[in-house]
Image 1 (tube, rainbow, N blue to C red):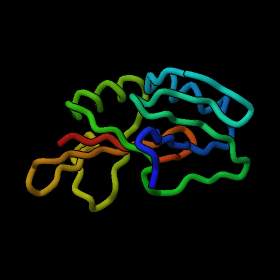
Image 2: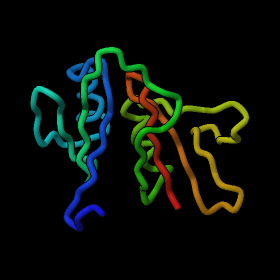
Image 3: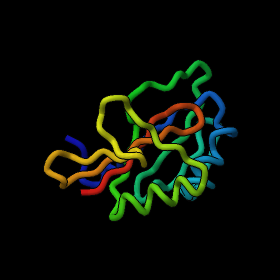
Image 4: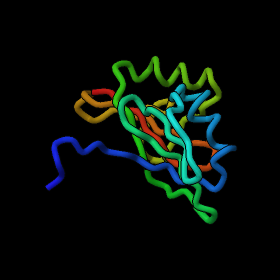
Length: 125
């Protein structure tokens, strides 16, 4: 059993940490809280996120990290204004902004990729 004080840490793998850092820091607005030879640490809104270099890393097609936001449409618009392109999956039924809404209308989700292709997500509901 994990101790009650255990804190989760997430990793985003990258071929070039220095090149990827501006996206997470400047576009997404995550604060850098540290760095060492093995990674750059960011505050992903309460979760420690480490950008870690793996020389031969190839991003997969599935989300590696997602955030729940109070207003998905506003967050999507703000990120689009910062140059983020949202992913549209053929046949998935997303709207023009890349937002998928669950059949009951209670959950909305949108996906985007960092410059290396790591898929990230946003959800509301």
